[in-house]
Structure formats: structure tokens, C-alpha cells
Image 1 (cartoon, protein in one colour):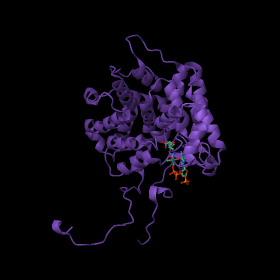
Image 2 (cartoon, protein in one colour; image 1 turned 90 degrees about the vertical axis):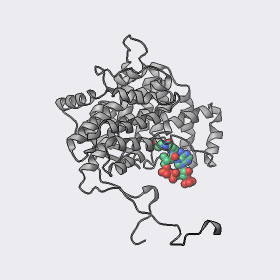
Image 3 (cartoon, helix red, strand yellow; image 1 turned 180 degrees about the vertical axis):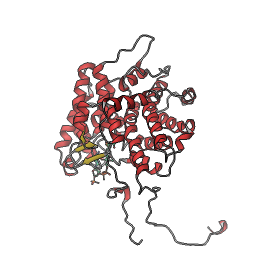
Image 4 (cartoon, rainbow, N blue to C red; image 1 turned 135 degrees about the horizontal axis):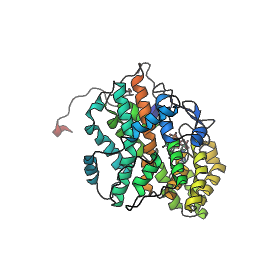
Length: 388
Ligand code: CMC
């Protein structure tokens, strides 16, 4: 096999050069363009973070205004997209609806195929960031059999999303500022995470020079899986299955025997506490002050306590990841579990498009095309049917 390296799951292969997100998995450090995630979660907004990921610097007031207006003017969806979404079964999973609809947008914007033009890329990047919450909200309302609410660009990004989801009457829907801020913080925390499975898919598909809607549909499909963004939904299912604190030791014993995983624990890169989980845990308490506590929180805390003291988890450096507490907040905000991964996909859109743009600016970029170690037969003669 010559000099070929066998690296299944690319655990030790850098697939690209990137200046966007830095992770130190041993120390539990996450930075976007050099800014610590803790500072961004405290002081920034999701759209400002999206700008930072994309352009590398924090914007001035005028730059931020331009950027926000450039996004907000694209929040509407073509009416035919609504018809398309109506065609899904009444019980369609919102994540399946989300990724199919994003892919369908490719047919509405044929000019997006011109991926070598930076201005064209920027226009569709803004469209994708703008339209992802609208698609998500429509997918949610479809799953509930409710009418669709058009975007209201007088609201901020998170507020508009909550309005599209939860407005029920003609009367103005009052968005609670604490919940709106909590959602924006969750959006900041989920915006990018270097070469995770979804982002790697975005780059691999984008490397064929396909339009960004098609590439993002593939990235969202990767995120849908339970080992990736689907873990937040799986955590809630797991907590419900465990049922009470008394059952935690039995559940942990089963995990240690290899009968299932502790969802929301472990990470390919973090071998210490995921810094996002720490921030989310704190944000959960702010949300619960408004919504009342989530009864599953006590169970989650007990599970975390026992796991962090258990030799199995200590030895393997398994700590809570971003998905362990996020589902509890989403549930308190009024979302059903099928929406959790969609809530991850909305902000991750900012990371996917920034990474996709970086890919197209990299002079070393080529179509992603790994090799393989062939383990099958070599040349043999075709056997006629009556001789097999
Ligand atoms: N529960 C129990 N054991 C685990 C877990 C877990 N959650 N995660 C890893 N292990 C064990 C695994 O069985 C293996 O043990 P052994 O060495 O005895 O065979 C060891 O730890 C190493 O695991 P691995 O599967 O080789 O690790 P990986 O880097 O391939 O997997 C992971 C990373 C995130 C897929 C995995 O930790 C996992 O399945 N976690 C649960 C799902 C989850 O929470 N995913 C969200 C990840 S963070 C956000 C995101 O990416 O979307």
C-alpha cells in the first residue's frame, strides 16, 4: 500500500487548515477566532458570532448593522417551499423535514452554483443563516398541525424564532427576554466546533463545488445521527427511561457492561469537561427561574455525579458534553424532543457556511477523495449461474 496511512474515522488526520475554531481537548478550551467561548457567551450575540466566524474579526457597529440587515431581509421562504413542506407526513421528524427542505432550496437558487465568486457565496451564506430558523419553525408547526407564522424582522434573531414557533393568536406574542437571551447563548455555544462529523461532511461535499444548500443538507444529515447532534434528544429519552434517581446505579452498571451508552457523555476531542456543558448548566438555572424547574434535572445531576466518580468513566476520560444539559433547557423552553437537533442545526449553520467559505478560499483545496485499504478478492472469472 506504499505510503498510504490507514486512519479509520480520521482520528489522527488533519483534513484541512482552518483559522476559525480552536479546541484544546485536554484543557477543555474552546475559542472562536481566538475569543474564549465563555466571553462570547457572556457578552456577544449569535449574529455577531456568525460575523466573527465568517470574517475573523469582531464587527464595528456599522459592520454589524449591515450584516444583520443583510441576513434579516432573507428570512422569508418562497411560498412553494411552504407547499413542499406541507407534503410531509403529519408525524415527519422535524430534522428530516429540515434537511430535505434546505436541500430543496438549491433548486430555488441556481445562481448559488457559482461557488468561485465570493460575492455570490456571501449572498447565499446570508440566505442560509436567515432561512434556517424559518424552516425549523415551519417544520415544528407542521409536526403540531399548526398554521405557519411569517418571520417578523422587527424582532431579534432568537426572538423572531420564538415568535414563529409559539405565536398562537393575532395578538402580539410576548417574548420573555430571559428565555430569548438563553436561546441566543445556546446558539452562540453551538455555532462552530471545528472538524466534527457535520462540518467534515460540509467540507467534503462542498469540495465537489456543489452549491451550499446541497452541501448543508448533507451536513445536517450527519448532525441528525444519535452519536452527533441527535444526542440531545437521546439524553431526554434516556433520562425518561431511567425514570428516577433510585434507578441510576443500575443504569450505570448496564452501560459499564456495554449495554448502551451514557448519552451526552464523552467526546472525540474533549478529554475533560466540555466548556459548553459548563455554560449550559449555568444557563439552565436562569431558564428554570422563569419556567420552573425541570423534574429531570435532579436525575441528570445524580447521573453526572455518579458517572464522574466511577472508575469506568474516569479511566476513559468521559465527561458531560454539550448535549447533556441542552435538552433540559430546550424542554423547559417548550420544545418537544424531536426539535432538539433542529435547534442545534440552526446555529451550526453559521459554522458550516464559514467553514465552507474558508474551503473555497484555500489555494490547496481539492476534491475530498480519501483512499482505502482494499480487503477484497483480486481478479477472478465470472461464474455462470448454473455453476454457482
Ligand atoms: N458511554 C459509555 N461509554 C462510552 C461513552 C458513553 N457515552 N463514550 C465512549 N465510551 C467508551 C467506549 O465504549 C470505549 O470504551 P472501550 O475503550 O472500553 O471500548 C471508550 O469510551 C472510547 O470510546 P470511543 O467510542 O472510541 O470514542 P469516540 O471518540 O469514537 O466517540 C462519541 C465519541 C461522542 C461518539 C462517544 O463518546 C459517544 O458515543 N457518546 C455518546 C453520544 C453523545 O453524547 N454524542 C454527542 C457528542 S458531543 C456533540 C456532538 O458532536 O454533536
